[in-house]
Length: 251
Image 1 (spheres, rainbow, N blue to C red):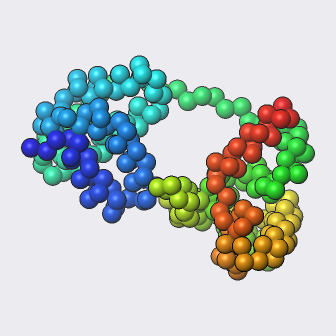
Image 2 (image 1 turned 90 degrees about the horizontal axis):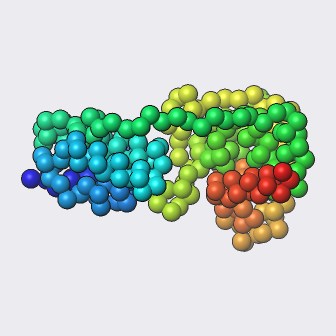
Image 3 (image 1 turned 120 degrees about the vertical axis):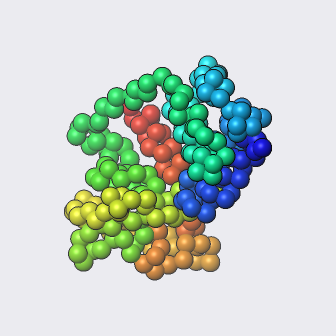
């Protein structure tokens, strides 16, 4: 007799929260609360049909939701219904039978070496310039570069350890482990990276000394490489905004 709205709530709290990463729970909760419960929550699990789900997802596309967002709605719904199948509450997963428009990813044009040099010249005065250098040299994600701790930088062995990433979860910035073994990697500390990191270490020490009691970032090897002026983590969104601002200002 489960209604979908109630079952989704149960699934989030009893299955996703204890067994999945905090970031996964947070993303799934947003999809459930904003889309699935308002749009399909009134149906009983046993009454949910392929046409009902198909109509709901088609309406989401018409209302302006992107194809990737709609695919994510189906993905979350399908995961919940798979759990309901395991519990023998339903006999089939209707979300898997829905047809969606094939998704074509936008083509990416990487920057040329000349464009990268121009960007570095424009970004050099920015306090986050060392982070931009690491992003270009290693292709790390925003959260990965902002999740670097000094214990991840081995100046003696010339190795950069990519182990964690900084993410916003339930409104708070948190350090989380990378999801896969492939994500956890050791990169050579090339000269350009070593130079900017040594500069960053000196600069951070000066800022921490000037801030004194106002510094909130602690200290030692566990301290983040990139912090705000009072030692708190840098929001990945702010790093992205700085990047966009530099690109727009300098063409």
